[in-house]
Length: 344
Image (cartoon, rainbow, N blue to C red):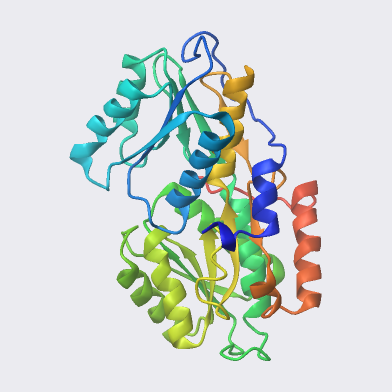
């Protein structure tokens, strides 16, 4: 998927990341020597062309640049595999990156049983009794805000084929959980910043690996008047992009640059640079600045989230709109525009 990554995406992996230190530990979880083995444990499977694959790109970058061995352990959304997957990784690796949706309890147990291993949870915050788990916490509402800005601008741009004058946009979430709610909340804020009259319709399909369900949900939204639908559903969301092409409508991709998956029907993608953020944390582990039990906060300012604007985007979005989008992005970074996170 690297050929689809935009200039902004490439910069995300190299940019300086601001660190929000919520809690800090010292000795536990720190390796005495440079780690030689790094594992990536995911609750799902690779091949989503989105979230999990972004983390895998970061893992391969770590392998290449630091000369370590790496291993992926896929739990494949199977609860009975959660504990053994984590246990396998902890026995083999010095550093374990984990996407722990649904297996937070198992991660806490395994981390407590292996206090001399480094555990980094990705995309949510997980703590354990020994305070050795660190977390990468994305401010995804900021990137989704920008996606909402694009959707609201384009939903009345009737010069583009397939756009109707109705002020309706949509979103398809893989599941109804706090992270996806944060995406949707940011998306709504961005849309209403542009035009308070824009209506946002959301469908949660309850699956991360079913493109057919994603396509059905998107087609439902298009039939209800939406002409732009935001994919927030990993592999399920590939169906959202396909639906945009089949319906002659438009989608916004997520996590990686998906603009080229359905050319002419993906306006932009809301990047969440999982791999780049994993790389940055591993670099801290290697240079000695990493602290166990820390929450690292990554957002728009750090280029860990943000829009992929490339030639595919420029063929669809007018230059004047792109200038306004960039101006709004700068206002979010400066704090002039406050994007509120979702709070359950």
